[in-house]
Length: 389
Image 1: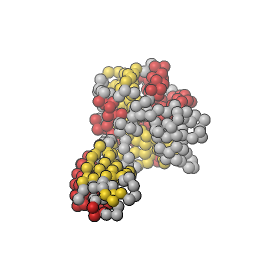
Image 2: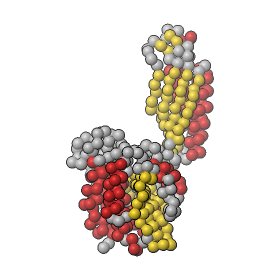
Image 3: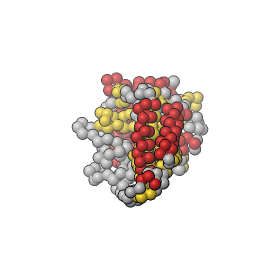
Image 4: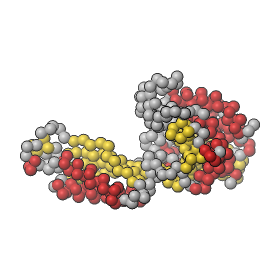
């Protein structure tokens, strides 16, 4: 049976799997039922697997003939803390939790790829590993899975992965060579002054005025210290301090996010943020205590593996339906930890409907399930090509 026909024959089952996962979403690190269901499917299809990777993650493997490569596929399995309206027959029954980022679709596509590849097991030269990864939305489950050895025994040569995109039509695949996602991290600035009566500002050091000056001046780092050809983003989304309108407060907290396309740019921006915040505060007679917490590293696609994904996608959707992403995204994606370890490629799968489409992380996000056929076929194609090279 041809690959496309195999996928058509299991599509109804995949829809049923996806809707069950969508109906029972679980937050990062709590993917217990999700994991049990994944194991049930793998067990029913006689696919070898190991649980407890990064606590709630699962690694499955299909062992083909010896002497070939080992190729990995990754899918994230966690959901978001969003309340889903009852617009779908299979809407979330878990209060305040929703698969609003399409991870239920990613998981189902990889399960479909696993079932198809299992049926071809005797023809494979090499192995295929499947990484059912927890906690993409929170603490970086990819890094934890790698530290737990998912890329070892046997050693993985390449990893591929995908993300559904509602802004891209179903039937299209989006590719990006090189930098796809920037690295991310958080910034906290504690601004310390001296409190006093609002009527006598000369007797105090106003932390709110200092914080305002710090925020304004820090914006010049991106506009004046970073090349306009090398994107960096610094955004403060939270500011709090003060107790009463007639009291000059001695303490204000600023919390924000810092994103860049490479580690060098991130470290440069961090140094400038610290120096400028401290200097501005000192000019007012106060202090600024700056702390950083690094998030996900930048996702950089390997050209060779991206070429393989491209040729695989062309066979499925045609060259006219390949879309090339012009600029990298500053959003974080922890597939980056796989691409940092072995040559890998991450691509975007169109899942948009005709008409209005809501973005990822929206409570109204609805995927076009027909995209799953394309996702399965591209993944299987890419694996087969990588095993033969």
